Image (tube, rainbow, N blue to C red; front, side, top):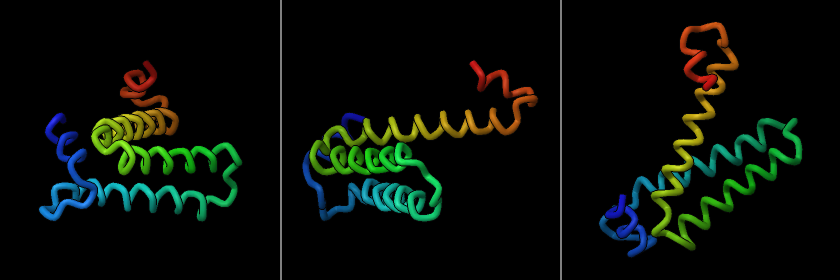
Length: 103
C-alpha cells in the first residue's frame, strides 16, 4: 500500500500508466454517483448531499491529497462491501448466513 501511495504522490498524470486504475475507478465512481441522482428522482435532500459529499471526498483524495488516495479507495471498498452484506441480510434475514451479517 505504501508503494501505491508513493506512486500516487509523484504525479497526477503519469506517462507510464501507473494510475490507470485510479482514473478508471474515478470515472466509474463519478458515473454511479451522478446516475443515482438522475435516475432515482425520489432521493431526499440528505441522500443528494451524501452523493455530493462522496464526489467531493473523491476529488480531494485523488487530486488534493494524492498520497492518501489508496487509503480512501480501501475505505470506499470496505464501506461498499459492508453495505452489500447488510442489503443481503435485509433481503434474506432467515437465511443461515444472516446471523453472520447481523453481528
